[in-house]
Image (cartoon, rainbow over all chains, first blue to last red):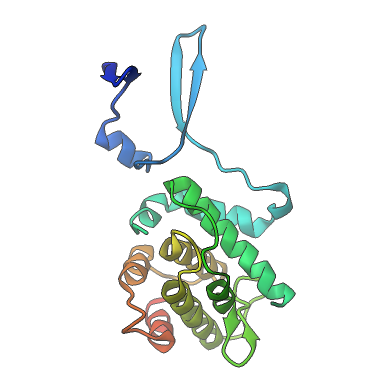
Amino acid sequence: MRRKIIRVGSSRGVLLPREVTRAMSWDFGSEIELNMNKEKKELTLSTIKVKIPDEYNTDMMNEIVEILNENADVLGGIDD
Amino acid sequence: MTNDQVQQVKILGFANWLLARKFGTEIGIRDTSAMENVVSLPGGGSLTCFLGEKLSNRRDLYTQLGWFVYYMISGEPFNSKNRSTTLLMLSWCLKYYQMDYDIEALRDFIRNMDPMKQGNSDISLWFSSNCH
């Protein structure tokens, strides 16, 4: 997929197509991760992987994370 | 609050934190009294369905879920994602009890639920009719 770099004030930006933001469950204000590989001249955008704090690392909490990831589109369907 | 209730507040807080982080909304508890109501049952009882100890019969489970949903939606204990947190925890609970349910129907029920018109018994009835 090709995109042009556009001017956003004094900065440079890239617009994300709607089908991409929908597929990734990204909305206004969502935080995402940028990983740059200078040697390969590559930039990757990815969803932030949520890590469970060590003191909460129980089976149940891992199951809750799994359910959230499996049903992100359904859970994102409630605008609250 | 009892230790069991504190444990359940931590679990609910974790689920809410996950959702708020994922969807970019405000993190944190808005109202501690409303939070206490969510993990309490009438008559001095405590919510136990999220502690990993299976309730002996479905009727008790539906009753607990009825109170849980009612207080989560009417009290809005968190700054954001109260209904989504309710749906996420219900999904965990129904899966834990190996019950068949339609998550989209459950989402629609939670999204449209009006605590001014529907009480805990209406919610319990919905679970008994739609989750088997």
